[in-house]
Image (tube, rainbow, N blue to C red; front, side, top):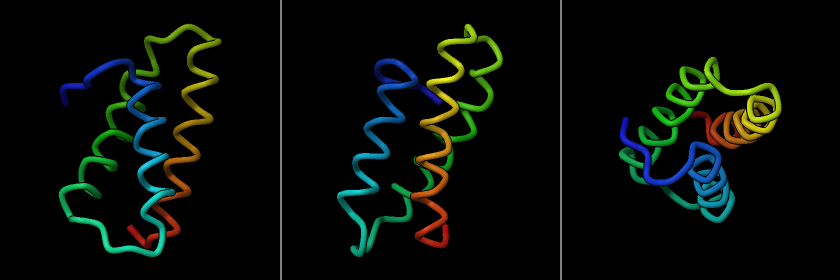
Length: 72
């Protein structure tokens, strides 16, 4: 997966989009992107410093919760 910007900025953007689109239909491609972003973030977090991984962990949980609330 090619990220545009930092991992954390991509997670922030995905969370903001998911929140903005609550209660609205979302394209399957968008859901797939969010899911792939979660997988990529988990893969990349192994190489992060402790402080960066803690911030990333919190964002991962937020995005996971957004997707879970959609039943994705």
